Amino acid sequence: MRRVAFFALLVALAAVHTAAAQPAPWPERPIHLIVPFPAGSSSDIVARIVAQKLGERLGQQLVVENRPGASGNLGTEAVAHAAADGYTLGLANTSTLTLSPSLMAKPAYDPVKDFVPISMIGASPFVLALYPDVPAHSVQDLIALAKTKALTFASAGPATLANLAGVLFAKTAQIELTPVSYRGTGQEILDVVAGRVDMAFATIPPTLPLIRDRKVRAIAVTGPQRSAALADVPTVAESGLPGYESVLWQALYAPAGTPAPIVTRLNGEVNAILHDSAAVDALAKLGVEAQPGTAQQLADRISADLKKWHDVIVSAGIHPQ
Image (cartoon, rainbow, N blue to C red):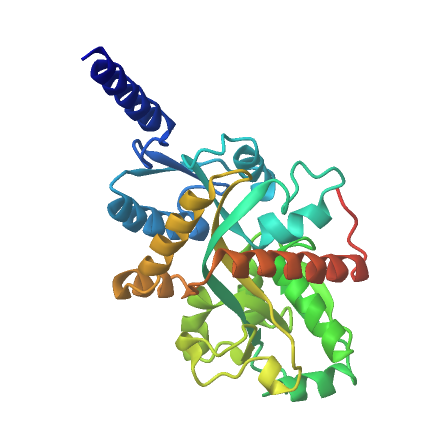
């Protein structure tokens, strides 16, 4: 009888030990999503679209925290220093993970070592928009024109992706384009309309009405494929500059060390969201084309863009600050 009781005790203790060894169910409380840009920005709106859908699928609220500052570096650094327990995620984009490391004299984070990629969300190409009196109706026309006269393009500053898109275009086409810097994105396209500058690599949604009213001429988009919003406008690559691409992508990521099962679960849920027509349509209204994919594909994209944009920044003579 005592032996039976002893074995029963062992079984009970083993059960308790096994239960204690099991990880706590995830998620069991709200998850914080850090957005390194102001509320109301395009990145913030993308984050909130995904956060709402992801919260519904996980059964826990995703609390969006806006931590703007230093061109997105403050919020990104906060993600790097957060606990790797699956309860802090971050919204990244091309600038924060692949431009900033080459633009900072003393980077506050390592884009590869400090984070684990989860999933791409989507990408926004630029449209190459010209002042209507510029006598160029295609990329090849523009290249030929640039070899005969000086041309300018508007940018929101040397360290912005729109400016680097122009720098990369000129480098790829082997021409010279003179950047004209602006403090924001609103005035630059208006100056193209007024003819004060010849062209801009502009975001598509706010430029669409100007294109339709023929106040600017769209000759190409900078993505790997045509934009649904400008289906009749070819890409730069198909216009004679193969390999050219410049897009602002948005992605979900987490602090390094976040458990693999959580990363796998999140990747699956985000991909499910990006196949949902309502989410895809909401993103499309922002000019964001949904791009589902694996965590490894995002890691590969980050690695490739780090090298690509570092080379462009160096060739443009932009010095880290």
